[in-house]
Structures are given as C-alpha cells and as structure tokens.
Image (cartoon, one colour):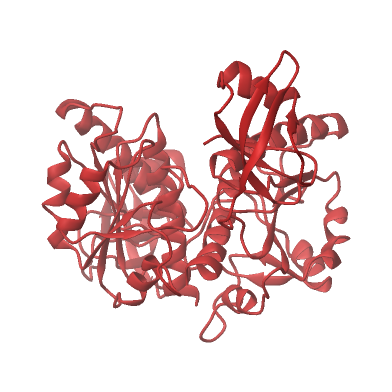
Length: 249
Length: 249
C-alpha cells in the first residue's frame, strides 16, 4: 500500500485533504479512486491507514480507517555525517541509509574531500537528497523521512556535537580494545530514545588533526572490523549493526 | 600496500614468481621496482609481505619478508544467494558484499526474476563478477577472494542446502518470535568455522511455493527488522550484522 509523508503533525479530523505533489502522485500517477486506501504519515511519526472518499481537480479527501500499529523506526536516533565523497556516493548513502533507518544525514567538507560545493550548489543538492530520502522512506515503509543538512564548514559539524548523546568517529586505525569493540561498547551504553552522531570520512579518510579535534570535542573513535570499508559502505555497516542490536537481538 | 591474490596455496620458497595479470599490474600499472613491498595472498588464505627482488620482461620475483598476522576473514563462512535481480544490482551486491566479508556468492533464477540468462551469458557474467570480487577483496585487505556461482535452475540451489551448517531465507513476512529474532537465534547457534547459506529474493520476492520448498529442505525464515529492505540492501544488512556479532561484540 502506498505511503505519503505529510508536513503537519497528526490530529484527529473528519477528513484529511491532500494537495500538491502527493495529490499528483495519488491521482495522476497511481490513478487511485474513492474506496482505495493509503498510508498517511505525519510529521510526528504517527501513521494512519486512510481511505479515499473523494477526488476533485485540486485535492484528494480521505478519512482515517485506523492507526498503523507497528513501530517502523529505530529505537535510537542515528545521524550519519559524511565528509563529502566523490560522485553520487552521498545520494547512494542517503537512499540506502534511509532504508536502514537513519534519522538524519549531514554532509560536510572534510580536509581530504575533493568536491567543493558553494552555497548555491549545496541548496540544490539538499533538495535532491531530500527527495531521495523521502522516496526511500516511502518504499521502506518508514514513519519518518530523514532530514538532510549539508554544511559549508567542518567547524559547523563540531559545533553541534553537544546536541547528541554520543558522537562516534568511524576510524579504521582504531582496533579492538579488549573483549568488545568501542563501537559495541558505545551501543550498549545507549538508552532507547537516545541520539547518536556517527562521522565518516571521505575516500581519503581523516587527517590526524581532524581526529584530534573530534576527540577534543568528545568524539569516540570506533573501528568497524578488520576489513577496510569504502566511504559509502561504512555508514550502511553501522546502521545495520544498530538495527540488529536494538531490533533483532 | 598493494595486495595480489595467487591461485596456489602457500609454501615456503626462496623466491615467488609472479606473471600474468598481477605481473602487468605490478610492473605496468604500479611501475614497482626492486625493494618495494606488496602483500601476496595465497589460495589457502595465508598472506605474506613480500619484497620485489627482480623484475624481468616476463616475471616479477619476490622474497618473503614476514607473514601477515592480522585475521581479516569472518570467523564463519557466509554464502549469499540472490535470486537474479534487475540491472547491475548483482555486481553491486558482489562488490559491497565482498568488502563486508562474504565467502561466496550464488545467483539463481527465482520465480519472479525478470532477467533470463542463458549458459553463455552466465559464463560471461561469472567472469565479470569474479573480477569485481577479486578487486574488492584487494581493496578491503581480505585474505580470500569470494567464489562466484551462477546457477541455471533454482532446483540446483536447493540441492546444495545440505552442504551448509545452516540455511536462512530472508523473508520480510517473518516477524520477531518472542525476545530475539530467528536471525539472531540462528547466529547465536553458529560455531566458529561454521558455514551458513543465506537466500535473498529478487525485487518481486519469493512465492509461497518457493518458501514452502525452501522450508521443506531445512531453510529457516528470518525477518531483518521492521523496515522493507531492497533486494540489493538486505545482503549487506546480514553481512554487517554477522560481522558485528562475531567480530565486534
């Protein structure tokens, strides 16, 4: 069943009115008619099953049938921050990372980032990535479409460390310390509802200075196993491991 | 440092001789010279650090400096079997899945697979995927380059179930049963060195009949969390979770 993300929070209503892009998709693309049902997902992560009651030239009108019971979101809020990688890798991380439950994506220019994006380019990129995230959220049946934040300075990333309960840096140099890895230890310390920021370098990785600054501001270095993962693969490893730890074990 | 995979098992030798594609890469691509070092990875997963002693028109001659100590391979052998997906998704699964530690990749025509590949096409595909797997194994610093097996009939897949200690089927319908998921339970029952076959459907998923047959032959249905993962994402989720469970926790 199709899912549509709405920008407003849920309130009980006689009827829900849909216009704009969602209207276009329901009426022109899916050619839906009265009596057919869709999921409406509200900005506060509440989702309902709704039935179409009327379709006009401007709007689709629906009524609530029931609430979606199943919890589709990770019990912790994971923010994936990537040093700008080459080509379309960021788009790819956003699509796959959204399927895997990421709550937010941040892009930032790391020292070894090759691409240099100005303000205008970043605004365009943000729009494009938001679209990719929303489509992936619909397809993976999520109740939340991840936010996209593209920064102009690495310093801006460091300045928001304090907004998160934990900040981890994926760093291939950091090996296992004793029985468990620092990544597994960090996860075991996270309470349900906690927020975690995990930072990944671009293809060239991080410089010792960058790592130092991250650590000075409370970032914890984490290895992700003995194999070298590419810039675009490491975020998917982390999200999969977090889902496994919090949703399956 | 560059890694080169050799087809023969390790034996102690005065000198190791490299020809063919690896020779071409060392001499023509990397333009390496005597005294430079590379990793040589043998078919029995043993890797050594070797120093170039001589380069001729036909061969590179190297001597062993030391063995590679670190263990880079997953402690369980994971085989990823994918119902043939559309486009280049299989190539993509092989590249990323190799980074994440897969031991073997099997492709097979599931009932809902759209692509139909004949014998000739499958042979060509196999060669291409082997190349992708070897390159990814080199880049991710592995000690083993995964095998590629592309089957012509789904029945051939079922007939090899008995070669594995456990056979799992990724199936979105199967929910959590009690505290742990059947996937986490299956992993907790795996001993180091065990072999596990995990089967993934194409975009259209599996038919009830296919699922029935898999189960009749000992396959265990596993859900992978509450979000719907794409055909090409689910194998990466599974490999990441296995690495986390066996290498980090």
